[in-house]
Structures are given as C-alpha cells and as structure tokens.
Image 1 (cartoon, helix red, strand yellow):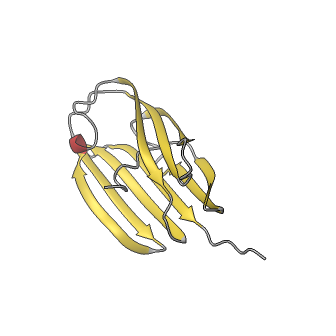
Image 2: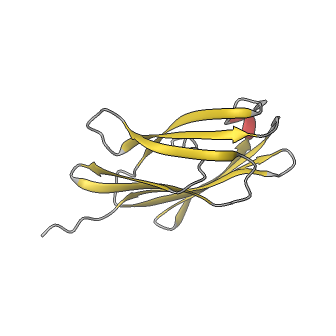
Amino acid sequence: MFIIALFISFLSSTHTATTNGQPSVMTVQNCNQASVFQNISYEFIPYNTTYESKQLLSTTYHVPYVIKGGSVTLDCHFNGVSVVSQTTPLCEYLSCPVVPGPHSTRRDAETPPVIGTLACTMKLNDNYNNNLLCSYITLSQPISLNS
C-alpha cells in the first residue's frame, strides 16, 4: 500500500535528503506530455522528524471535465526486479466523480530502507482509456563510499 500511496506528477522534481548520514534521492517526472490533467505541479515536503527519508509529495493539478471512473495501473521495480504490478479502480484512489477545477493531494513518499532504487510508473486512465496522468517516480538509497 505504501507504493500505491505515491501520487502523480507532471514537471520533473528532485529532492535529496539524508538518512542515517547517507544521501537519499526522490524524483518524479511526467511520462506522457498528452495527459488530460493540466497545470500540474508538486513538491517534496520534509516531515519535521529525524526520519528524513520520509517526505510528503504534494501535488496540484487542474481537471478539465468530470471523471466518473477509470483505472490506476502501477508497475514498480526494485533494482530492476519487478515487485508490484497491479491495476485498481480509479475511484478507490481518487474520490469519484472528480469534478472540474483545481485539486490538491498529499501522499507519503519514502526512500527504501536498503541500498537500491525503487522505480515506479503510475498511469491513471478514465473510463474511455484516456490518459489522465502518467508519472515516473524513483526513490533511491545510493551506496556511500566513505574514505
């Protein structure tokens, strides 16, 4: 469920934090310029805790028409190995119907607790298979070479 809680993006964004003295990197970028959702922006917001690898991904976007349903497809790989491949109803992810206008969401994003990269592609489609939004999200805990 942690992975499905990651949400959507349009522009490219990167956040670097420190976890137990090691750098961790979170990025989000658009994987479909023709998405229906418009004026999408987001930012990573650090929690006010010592557990710095956990961030809040804040996303704002404009919906141009009523969306009554659809699907969310999530494919994730950890260090190149498939760990999640699932499709769920859109209305389990967003409150349907989604009305036209500005929207804002906040979801947890957390870097892996071990060295490696979790890379996910999330696609939201409406009932007519129009791509509402496509995001490519990476959460990395790189190896540190201390001398």
